[in-house]
Length: 578
Picture (cartoon, rainbow, N blue to C red):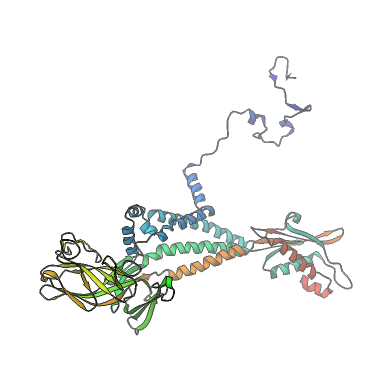
């Protein structure tokens, strides 16, 4: 029924009841209940909702900074950096393999423009890779600094006080102190605590006595390992990002009998770092004495497969005696602070070209680029000094020439068993003086007159030569002599001043990771409680993280401690308590 305060006053709604008992709390009977409690009348009847405080500009900055410097964000950015580096291993990079980029463009003419727009041929210098790199750097710095401060404060602080109820903790167990017989001194709380403290200290714990209990903790090496791991990772980022700007990478094709000198003009291609200077090129020479290849000759299905490459070289540096050594695949030559790698090899033809006036217009050993596994090679010979007109030749070299049923030549083995050279000869302006860069491995035949080539416009068919043979050119334009066949090697000279630092940081990363994974952080307490039935000793522990061996450690501590408290003489008791 409804009730009213007086006959003419407003009628109040009836209170909800359950089994005759009011379900409404009387605020006057519960003065400790806050006015905005969820069950209060004002909160229920109020039409206004909860108003959240506005963050403001500074608040949003603080929020985003905390998100960026969280460990979760750092791990996410590290994963994104690893994913962003994947294209660098799938496609050739301009900085390390420019010839591979050119070949990729030839092999994939439709896909190349798309990948080039995305910057995948220079993956590690693209804006999106740099953005992830810098965000990871900032995240690590913002994560490490407060953790280092907190860790140093924790190292200086004493172990926490012993909890009042050890029974709530892991590995809790309680034992009566050993009974006393004969003249042995009774086990007191002071002796029990002192003995426990000695055992804990020998086990590597930091200890602190609080009354009749000892508090101990260890495992701060775990957090130290975590900090070392993240700091070393930051060191790798800084070293690679900044130190890499002082390095350089260059390539050079060198024929047997030739010498490479470490000067800027000797490189076929050169990719310096951002902070590179010519002074970093330390003087040294590498003379290529001989290049040998071993081929499989026993396994039928693998005959002709190369099994070993060896480059015999002579190195020289100012103030040092010359040294003879070798360069092999995955076994680079270290000289002048740089590493020299063997990237590729092939054949080079030694030719002499005389012009129409009988003068030697060209005498050179020209590398031909391999086109298949049997080293059928393609090359270009340009003779800009020939008279009365310039000459250009496109040649195919066959190390082990054999004639196909169609009459065309092919190579059926990679070694030079039956070497032959075919040349398609063109006459005219080669365009070398128009200021446009041109590749030494390509010949633009537009505007050139075919002299000895395939096609109806040529005077003769392509020339075929063997080593030691000379063939005259049509129309009295001169002659070509095929002198010899040599091998060439493609060298990659890589200078990276950060290698030692990266190695040190990498070792620290591994050590810090192992320490963080396998060093448990735990707290242990031993408490002496005097009861009606005598002295009772309690043991318990608390893991700070994953620690599956905590209970076993507490059990071992209890066993050793109780064994040490077994009845001894009074003098032994005094030694322990002291």
